[in-house]
Amino acid sequence: LPGLGALARSRGITFGAAVQGQLLETEPDYQRAFETEAAILVPEWEAKWSALQPQEGRFDTAPLDSILRWAQSRARPVRGHALVWHNDIPGWAQAALAEGRHRAMAVMAAHFDRVLAHGRGQIRDWDVVNEPVANPPGSDVPQAGPGELRDTPWLRALGPGYIDIAFRMARERDPTLRLTLNEYGVEEDTPDAAEKRRRLLSLLRSLLSRGVPVDAVGIQAHLQMARPFRPAPFAAFLAELRQMGLAVLITELDMRETQEAPPGLAVRDTMVAERTHAFVATALEGGVRTVLTWGLSDRHSWLASDAGVMLRDGRTHRGLPLDEEWRRKPMWEALARAFQGG
Ligand code: G3I
Image (cartoon, rainbow, N blue to C red; front, side, top):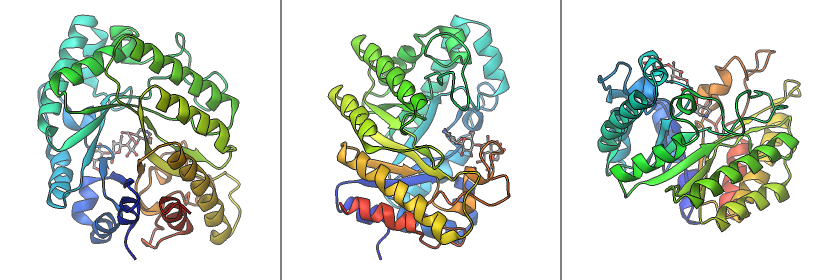
């Protein structure tokens, strides 16, 4: 059976996944899964600041290049993730940002110069700013700090206009790029997600009103079974984004089960598949044409390595389309059905 990438392509949809260069090189099963399933790739870590510029002026593009070479040899596009984010900022850059505006601008420009030139022609779209919106007070990672923007080293160095600066800096360097603002926690039917959707829409309206070159919105879609999902509020949100002229991508889809995940793989996999189908079908109806999962297999999911999200009883979230033995799961079927319009 053709993989998800081929099934999606037959309906004008681009499907792919986050990839780790080292695993691509060292694990044949991992490589085979990406060969079969992914028509687009995004580096899970290798295009972030701590990977690309671990020391000031010392750029290390080797990890990223292993992904670019693999993708190039198979004519697969690669997304860039992420030019500006509050995580994975190496120590030297944190210190530079704390020195103030002038130094921050210089460090930002030097990074953008080198990184955008490096990817030119192969990386066609970048997450220019990742997760700029402050989480509402009640959410799982409540957010202190001013107003509706997350309090980050970038905000402190450059003020709220840091987002404008980042998008303009990227556009200046490569006008052919699609520039994306990427965010999480805007998918489900909860008061916090509704508030975060409102905040994101407000931020985008203000950016576009100033002529800031935002082309697309990335919705991460790290979904949680513990939260309800209703198509209507999410569909309305997508319609508002489309009315602003923005393309919308699903950039990091995976599923966290509840801590009380029921026994038995079949029932768990069915629940995950049903939620996946409801979400992706709504996204596609709302005009989404690019869907990436954050990895392909439960074997290598951040959900099994990030202490904050792991299942406390030691089980692994079954939140990706392939299981730990690379077998297709009901979530795989759910994606296939959604891509086929089922
Ligand atoms: O630092 C080592 C490096 O020395 C080594 O060579 C390399 C080899 O794999 O691994 C590096 O380790 C870690 C890397 O993951 C491995 O892929 C990094 O220390 C660690 O910080 C990094 O964690 C990533 C995390 O973002 C922070 O960048 C996770 O893999 C990745 O799944 C996670 O992804 C984020 C998205 O970027 C944004 N949305 C949320 C999502 C999940 O947190």
